[in-house]
Image 1 (cartoon, rainbow, N blue to C red):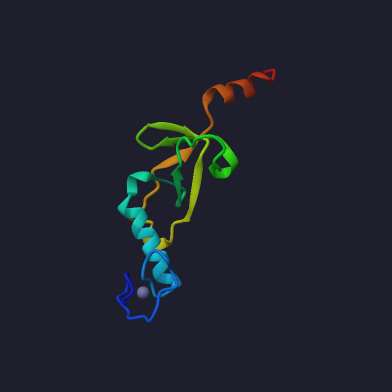
Image 2: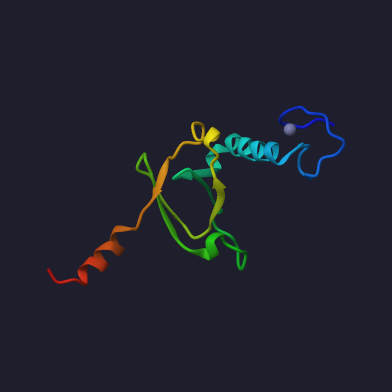
Length: 119
Ligand SMILES: [Zn+2]
């Protein structure tokens, strides 16, 4: 069999899902798959996240169910309590997987915080 990424011939793959020769090729394959399904992921500060969306009942949620507010550079805003971190994007992929959003705190919350102080 041959490595899916570099084509090197190997006796066996220690990865279940794909034939891959090394940790390095495993990582390349991981990021290639993210690029292939780009719209499922959110890139913030060179870190890749995925919004797991709504999960029924007691399923595990990303970041223990912590709520995140995300604003895309095009103005779209989303909020999720099921965000999953996919890892830091290696330098060689940062040109392809560009930052596209930032975390923010919703305005109501900021106003409430500010309201407590006397000016
Ligand atoms: Zn390889």
